[in-house]
Image 1 (tube, rainbow, N blue to C red):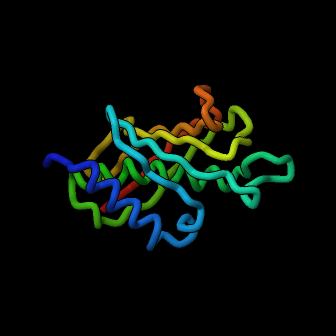
Image 2: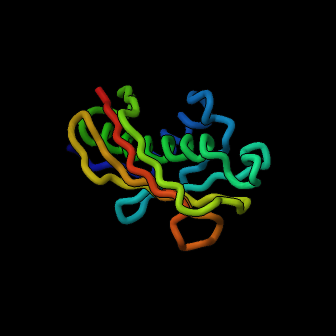
Image 3: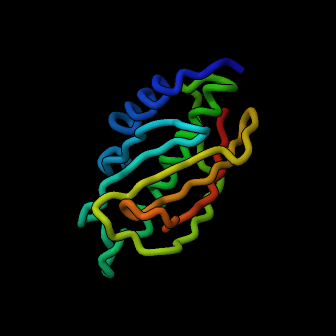
Length: 144
């Protein structure tokens, strides 16, 4: 395994989100930093991403979870192969703990277990500036 330049990795992954990832491209997800083994990001909660109850729609939140988890997968690919390797989500278990209603959702993701082809990660979402986890998820990815 080689040392990873996390600023370059974040820039590479953000470029992928902004230019090549189709569906998630328009959501405004930003990976802000990597610190102490975790990726941190944020996404605006626009009105068009609300459900009929006025909070964030579950499908929107699951997409945010998948993208934040994919940052961890990209890190593992950089360690074991190369970041251009292709990957896919194997499983995603989401716990909706509190409504998300603020204009901004904060995100964090980190590896629970990594291997040469499979990585499992934890993703937590926070409503605005709240310190209480509003959504937690465990996501597993496969990469070649």
